[in-house]
Structures are given as C-alpha cells and as structure tokens.
Length: 166
Image (cartoon, rainbow, N blue to C red; front, side):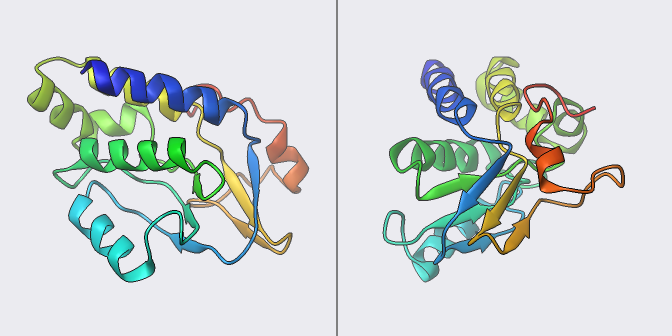
C-alpha cells in the first residue's frame, strides 16, 4: 500500500507539469482501452516493443472490468515515471471515482488491500492525467470524444482538469 501511495504521489508531480493537450512526435504506438488486462499489456509490449525502444500513447481506460487493474496501473505509472517522454497517458472515462465504483476497480482495490486507500491514491492521481494529445501537429487523439461546446484545441488547453470529471 505504501509503495502505491509513493508511486501515485510521484506520478502526480510529473503529470501536473504536462499540458491538458500533450504534443507527441512519431514514431509512437497508440494503444486503446486496457481495462485491467495486465497480461495483454505485457503481450503488447512483447510484440510492439518495450519502453524505451518504443514510444507509447495510451488513450485511457486502464482500469475496471479486468482482474489486474492495480498491476496494470502500477506498471504504466512506473514506466511513465522512468521514461516520461516515451510514455504518454490520457484520461479515459474509467479514470473517475464514480465509474470505478461501478465497474470493478474499487472492489479490486478493497479486496487486494483490505481498504479503499489504494483506490483513493489512484483516483486522486487520475485527476492529473492529460485530456488529449496531438501527434506530429497533425493527429488529434482523445479517449472517447469531446463536448459539442468545444471547437478548438486551445479550448481544451484551458480546462481545469485537476478534478473529478463532472
């Protein structure tokens, strides 16, 4: 539990320095929903290349549904801390307190650790994950869509993301 708290605290410091819209250069491998499928993530690295030889942009939904969300998030957090320029994390709709209480991450944390502390460390850290990325000033990437009231990338840059998704 203490190691997860340290991992999340250190990652918050790194994520807080990133923009809402992260600019990424190719080559980069773009990865969609992982949903706690830790062994699939390991297979992805085996096939696609391990960090730091391969750059990765993860589009969110790291937790819930699978049985290894804690392990998945710990690995991604450690990789981001070790190689912050090679691993980009975006926030998905499952990186919220409400969603994780419904789809399994909360239950997984309380089962594995006997309390909700680890869940709280992770969900507090989720508030700092960037919202979008632009690859090579050409390709716009988000998890699942945008509000119809947003018309420019500059509007995303000024959103206060350091909070639970409304």
